[in-house]
Amino acid sequence: MKNLFLFSLLTYCALTQTISAQDQQANPSKYTAHNKGKMYIFWGGNRESYSKSDIHFRGENYNFTLHDITANDKPKGWHVDYFNPARMTIPQTNLRIGYFISDNYNISIGIDHMKYVMNQNQVATISGNINEGGQFDGTYNNDPIVLTEDFLTFEHTDGLNYINTEICRVDDISKIFKLNNTDIFQINLTEGIGAGFLYPKTNATVMGRQRYDEFHISGYGLSAKIGLNFTFFKHFFLQTEFKGGYIDMNDIRVTHNPIDRASQHFFFLQRIVTIGGIFKV
Image (cartoon, rainbow, N blue to C red):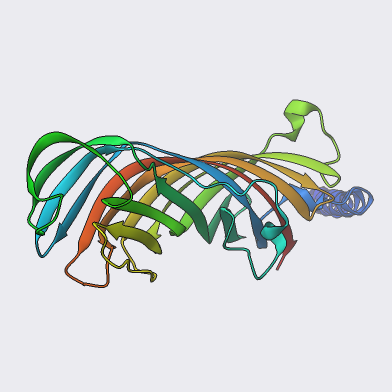
């Protein structure tokens, strides 16, 4: 009886494994059901908004702060330059390459090519001192000043380059929309956090000095994002994101004289639209 029981149990297990294998062959797992081991790349554009910022300037004969400075981005709009290799840095763009370390988590590296332009001719307040022997000499204590071009132009337009690493979670929410065949169309929710450094090319003219027009590591950034990913035919996707963060630039080059420096910190919000591909490695 004991041997018969063991034989029956082994026969049952063998049949169960055979039926399971046949069922897997008849109903193979969808490509989009698992992400581990996949790589992705995307490219797209953004619009940005910035908080007000205090900008501190220091040099050989001046040390002053401009308070509550406003700035905007510099959008290109829908344009062929996004796909022209010779002009890709002119628009505001996002490039990212990532790898899924599990079905739900990926790590990536990318560059957010933003643009920051101080609003010209705004009325600001100034504190500090200037002793240049020119029209702007004086000691200031929260005094109003008009930011004319002969006093200051200030922008990171080539650009405000945030080079960063992110870790993101991805969840398939297709069932909410009653989408059964995710290999044809899939909707994912993605959230992530990131950190990196700022590598801008700052275009600034401070009281008529010759501007310094080279790339320079100027500070660091922290960010978080949430977005929707729409995947088509397993390998191609459209991704939209809201991405916000904090930027601290404590070492900005503004003239050819290395003594002349600026610093600022502010918050930003990006609205991003990208296209990309995802493939098993």
